[in-house]
Image 1 (cartoon, helix red, strand yellow):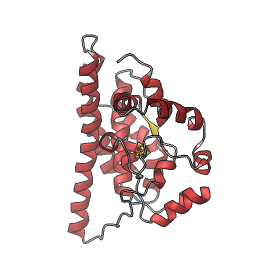
Image 2: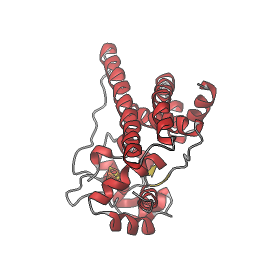
Image 3: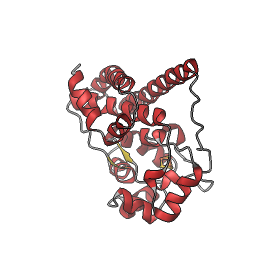
Image 4: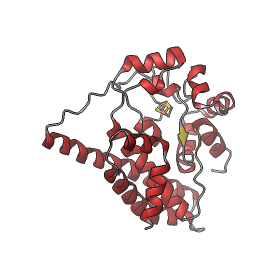
Length: 240
Ligand code: SF4
């Protein structure tokens, strides 16, 4: 594996470079990304085989993404154990079911995540809602989306994610230590930068996503992210 290229990918990522600049250790992020890339590559190779049928491709895609999320969780547990050993008090997350402030933000997903979400969205009967939302928010920048105060089409009436078990890595990464700061950011349409976060889950989920991206790029797969609704709407147009 080309560690220098992987290191460069991490260093150029705005989220990770900001975390490292503010004191988060880079080594665990790099280790996780490398492990995800290594374990993901054989599955991606199978997906690329011409003989692999659509159902098998979908199962392999799920295995790639679930594996990446599981490795991020394992790495997070290691950091938690280390915090306990060192007597460092872990920050308390303010995130809870029913608070959906972060589901009003622009979320970007990988082509694999779009492929994985499309059949789930179809099964939930949310194709029309996702396509309509793609038209409304697809072209909005991060700051325009905050000001628009438009929720994700996958948010249900109770303020919970209807695809929680298969939500994108960006959604898994989002966290906050201050619910009021999130609500303020969405209600006032500003102040995103002032939301305090736990850098551990945020950084590890992002590193895990970059591990998948790195392995995908090495196999010549499309890796450019899309706005969530746009990516899923596009994946919905493909034959299933
Ligand atoms: S996919 Fe789920 S968690 Fe992510 S923004 Fe949409 S509703 Fe929120």
